[in-house]
Image (cartoon, rainbow, N blue to C red; front, side):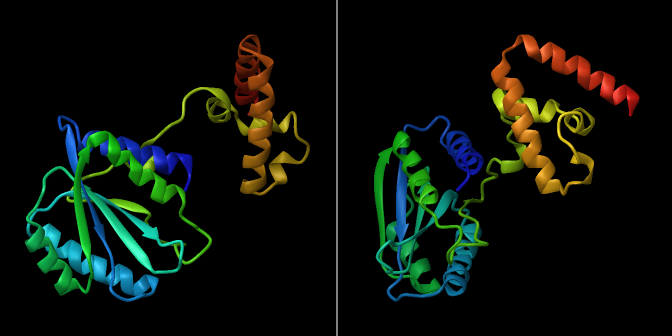
Length: 208
């Protein structure tokens, strides 16, 4: 899981629990070991029930390290009727469920599950986390400020081409890599060189 995705999840939970001191952490398991597609299908059935009954939360997927299939964790602001939630789970094909009350600060534990996700394995193509009847922070809305990332945004292709031969004939992936290296070099030179870099960038843009 990328740092950006983890940060978006943390921001989402911060907004979700604003004004609350406690939360409720739910764990949903399956009685049998099932594949990814079947798990997603059953979960979507359960989510449809949550949406119909206006149940809000944030969920993450976890793959059991011992090969026992999937677990799904969800945090909510309220303690919903356990028997009713269990009824929805039975209809959707789930097994045992567990819920516990804990401080809101403990909700950050969910980031542990997504951090351990193996994106190259059977989890590839899955949304690691998502909101249920709640608009979470979009990853693409996050912008890192400062350091190398800020310098990369300020670098123009014309400016980098002055430092890297054949830059204009490279693929987009190669260009991104070289932008990172040039930005890294300029960042480590110190703040005085930011002004020099800006002057060159403006001059290069004017020539283009």
